[in-house]
Image 1 (cartoon, rainbow, N blue to C red):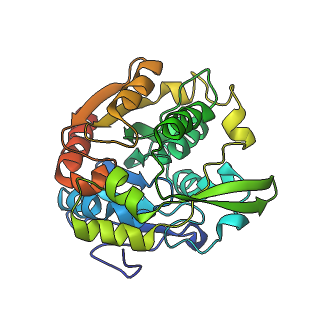
Image 2: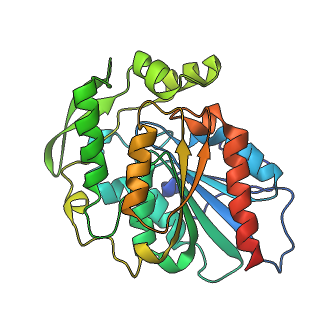
Length: 297
C-alpha cells in the first residue's frame, strides 16, 4: 500500500509507528461519531495483506488504519532488533494510545491470526478506547490463562500433523537470548494459507512475507494474570470463523471461542486462512455489520 497521500489521507503524527492510514472521502459529518477500523496482520505478514478490505471499508465510508507491526511489512527493523512481544506490538499500542478516548471515533480492532495476540494486549491496556475487537481466524486468548496457550496449542497440532511443510526455522539472538523465527515456505503458503485465494495474491504473499517471531518464551506470553476481566474481559469480542482454513482449523477456532464465553461468532464459508484475501467482500460485510450495530448505541 502506497505511503503517498490518497483521498483524504493524513500522515500519522509519529512516523516511527509506520502505520498506513487511509481516510475515506465519504466521511461522516464532523460532529458525529465515526468508526475507525485498525487492522492488524498475522505472523510474517504486513499491512499490505489488508489491501482489499481497506478499499471496501473506505468505500463504505469508514476510516481505516492498517498497521505494520515491528519488523513486519514495510517496518524497517530487522527481526533480531525486536526484543520483546511488546516491542513487536508497539506500532499498534502507539496508534491506539494516540486515539482520543470517548471522542469522535469508535475504535474497532481487527486482528488476523497471530495478530489476535497483539490486539488482546492492546485491549488490556486501553479497554476504554476499544468499542469492539474482531478476531479473524485469529489467536484469541482468554482471561485466566497466559496468552501463549493458543500458540502452544497450534504448535502441538502442527508438529503432529506435519503442517509446516517447507517452512524454515531461523535462529535469532535478541535481549531475551537465542530464539527461533519462522520463514513461511511457498508450498506452505499455497496449500495451508492461500489455497482458496487468487493465484496473483499467493504470488504477492510469497514475495512479501518476512521471518516472524512467535515470542513463545516472552514473559508477556507466560503471564497468566496479564489479561484481566475488568480490562480485556470487558471489551466486546466477535470471532470470525474461516470455515475452509486448514492451518488454524475450524475446530481450533471454535475451541478458542469456547474458552471466552460471550464472544459473538460469524462464519465465512469457503474462506482459507488468508480470509481477507480469499473472501474480502464477505469479511467487509461482517465488519460493516459490526459498525452498523455500534451506530445504534
